[in-house]
Length: 379
Image (tube, rainbow, N blue to C red; front, side):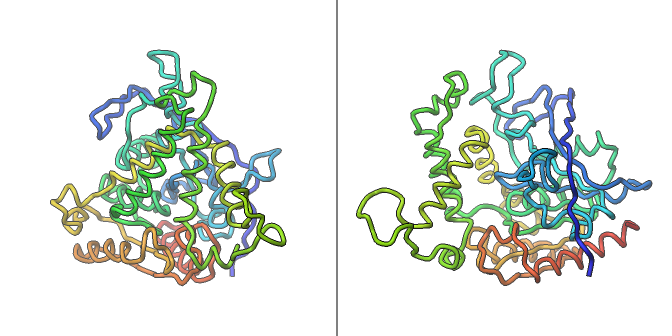
């Protein structure tokens, strides 16, 4: 068994791109910045790079910590680092904050060069394909002609799948974890309720709340609370919180009384402090828009015919937001095209968030598959 260690302190970097980026909406972004982090070393053949794509609330800070802040551990630190499944002693790992984000990459809170004010609601809508195109620009900047693998969970899984379609020759493997080929009507509905919570907040000001010196905190809190309920399974919530009261008996009030209420409010408060409301709106829309089959009259198998990568597809038994059945749709479409596909359905009580958790079976699959990737690139 490999011995895993901490990655230690890491430092974000910034890349500026002057060449215009044409977006799926028809808008052109004249220039943009991407903030990213890298871990490990690129080999002489430049063949051992792995791109990590983040989910809705993720960032470029995938692993390690920032100096002076011991609580700044990256969001996938259990997966990425020396001796971990994505072993930074063998792979050169790239994490990037997507276009439209709020952690340094150009997004709604960035200054619009044309006005000198934040873009706000004027920032264009972006799609998963737009993110992939911007990530390809970053790969060019880093002189990475081809990724050994592109991987991610949830919305990150959608990006890995899109990579295999937009740039089939530029990745060896696509690792699609807790993903779906498109959102169900129910999932689009959840996103709309979250967006309504934000846009109807009196402090939203049509998306230009920056000029008013406020943030739509109440809307963000509600959006995050709703999200957390859908990310966890009923079993996980009962196991963690049950029906436990904070006090000895009911107080017969609207104050926080149950542990689950306290947890959700705490998560909502934390999220409102660190995430931009406009970013949340356009990222949930990117989720809604993702549907490769739409380009092939609804035929997912036909849509995935362009792919050339090898695939690992993973799902979790209690993930009701992106259920295992949605992953099996992807697997079938890939097999219809005679592509190399490995599939595992992992037993877990954690719901959709299971892709972020440590699970012995999950990590065993990831270790075995990435060992294969490492051998192929001589890492």
